[in-house]
Image (cartoon, rainbow, N blue to C red; front, top):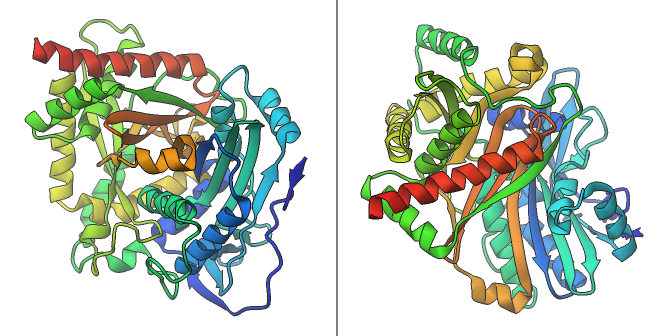
Length: 469
């Protein structure tokens, strides 16, 4: 049976003071998106040793003490349609424990024969913690532990994306592993923030977000009209209720080395190659006439911490990413031709400050799509074919992982509300590329996405092999 907080209530704490900050524009968009199924960030760990629960609990409390936004609650005011972060002075998260029987029941009910760890990851992404924004205030952080077998245990952190983007999630995972691996750590070590930091809009350098009124209107019109021309991955079931599911794209060390070398020799980043492979695989999957072009949208997410004012550290917790939306006509290009074109368009947009200047436009359109799904093809809420991150996560800490009994881990976020057909969360782990590819089900089937990801892998590997011959 589930133990310690079966209904996800946090443990009672001593009365404490509460500080309040309104959500910024981007944070507001995520608060709107999460109830529909996009923006539940999950950090998942598969370990071979029974997790030291008291040590984990202490580490999480210390992390919450260090980063106030992680102990916050999200409050919705329906009268003004605003969201606020309510931050108590004391940490509250409690690990919800599922024993072997309750874990087995979840896996058997939801797995469809797939890997138990992935099944539990999908289960965590789709829990409805934030489904009703009019309900009582909800915490931004929850934690669970599942017993899969005598030598397999899964630990999950589930976070509201408005409070924790991918860079923050990576920092959180590293700090958690460091604290647990080092005996729990002390409350005083590491960074400690006194209050919830400002929203990204309040930290954009002066002048970078400016755009003339007429230009903003034209861009909004352009985004809206172009969206009607976007090609999408074929929809399998656009009517049934949706959830987020995962397929992984993994390369071995040699394949990864060749791919990164191919990107470096062309002056592009990995995101360009991943986006290109996704577009090519999508077009080929439709068996179109030889010269028929399709226009695909690609969203590239940028960690802005290093270009804000003041500059934020790489482990600063909160949401500090922005997005660039580019479109590309695809018809028979090779991997490297399309990757170069895709990445060049992204760089040109960044050089024009579109990641800042278009931020409010994209947030507005995202909220409009949420409120009016009929404006999107088949009411699918698809805004792009694929989303990628400008830079992958690099992790070379295998020695620490072995010490902790860490068998596998995945960090990703749900996408079955508003968003792309495939959201790629890429990590280069000990020299091997490992991408968590999240998609909306049953809008797309597992067989459809698995076939697409397999084709993407062949495109990436063959593209590198052909140039080395």
